[in-house]
Length: 221
Ligand SMILES: [Zn+2]
Image (cartoon, rainbow, N blue to C red; front, side):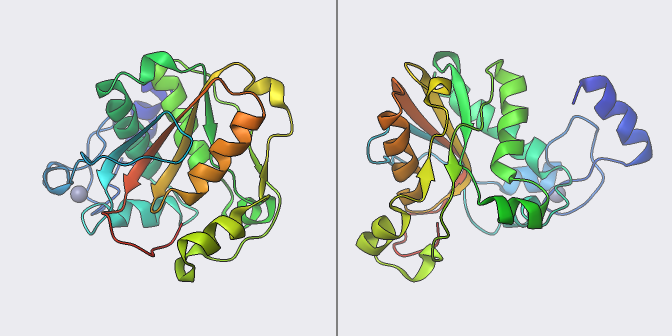
């Protein structure tokens, strides 16, 4: 969405903070109070097989309402706020200027129909506009997986095995890919998609998320 259309829309539907719902400026991400409470992610984390990992925020109480809104089917300002925060995170570490294509972590088509959108894809579109990199929904999820929450690390890997594919490898072949998701917990999902992207010929795979959970074992995704 252009700056002008955001400003126009704001006249009729005032922009709101995705954490506390207070009215904010048309181009703002969060209100100043919530913004001051957000915890930037500064940890070191690696996804098996990936070239780098970036995240904007530590997942916790201060950002959780924005993620809930993102997955609610309504979006509000959540995708805009989170996508631009990811743009900053990958700008800070130099990744933004060295990727050729942005690929969202896919959802099952049935799940996309239920929610009305894939939130990772919406984040990618806004992010792509901001950093001037094209988005290709090159990865596809085609098998139902169990919720990751209750599974051990090994069980997670088995659960995700052969759940993703790259139907048109040309979209990623010899390209530096930025793989994007909303929340990352153990990195198992990103690792499995990174694996299939490599098989499809991706030259590099960089992973980026809006939020990374603190290092607590055995959480979901
Ligand atoms: Zn707020």
